[in-house]
Amino acid sequence: MKLRTVPLVGVMSIAGLGLIGIGAHATFTTSTSSGQSITAGTYDPTLVGSCASVTNCPVAAGNILYTTSPDGKVLTFTPDTPITASFTTGDEEVTATNTGNLPVGNPTWVIGANVGPDLASGAYVCATSTGIGTDNANIVLYNGPLSGFTGTSYSLSNDVLSPSGTTPTATSGSTDNFVIDVYAGSEPTLCGTNTAAGTPATPGTSNAPTLSGAAIGENIAVDVQLTYQD
Image (tube, rainbow, N blue to C red; front, top):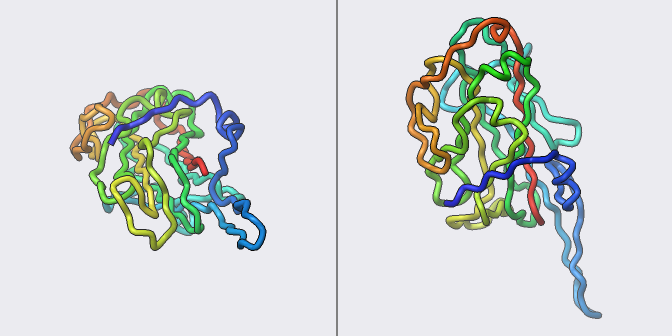
């Protein structure tokens, strides 16, 4: 698959292209000639979070791993606070499932984070995805400094998030996923030391610098949104 990384000017610039965010229930109709029925449907990807690979991910009171915005468009993981120079949030996974009855094209993960300034400049990120469809090899989307990760978007060109029950192909299926691990120092990640985007993810131990100073004790909460084309 060909990886496409798109720098973001801002989420509003994407919205201006007519994309519909997570949880929207817009109805579209197809014009027909007299006597024909009108077809209608919904575009409705739904986001769910999990802690992948049996790792330990931060949770809030009540064992809450993540929250979603009232409109369902943005999923935010529970904030993590590193208390040592070497840390990991674990493999925080977001899965999008098409719960509507119309396919959506070019699903794109939009990444943000609420993070302290020192941690923002000291932390690293491993991001991977198995993509959509029958070609489900786990690939590296990004592995590097957090400062180069937030405010960007990631997708696989020409993918289609199809309605549940549709037979998957190499580039279409009813689910898409995105796995994020924020870390520093020597920690197990799905990327290991591989920093080449678009190549197979090789789990291993990271070799990033450790945190120092005020970065230890600051919070980070990663948020994820899925945008797409109808």
